[in-house]
Length: 82
Image (tube, rainbow, N blue to C red; front, side):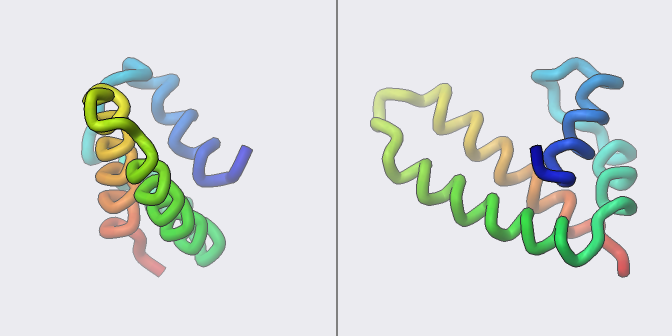
């Protein structure tokens, strides 16, 4: 598992796994991110967008899950401070 995924998973242990993470959890994740995690987040976003293109239109739940993950990664990136 990637370090970024481990950081996110650790916060989901504190909060309900399927809920959106609060801003303080996103800030904690971002504070632990360095260059490798930032690069990984950008790669994951590109991979998720590519996956989104393969999901059938009728599968709205999967579309929602992918977009929710993309938004989480973007929120983390917005909070990263070097």
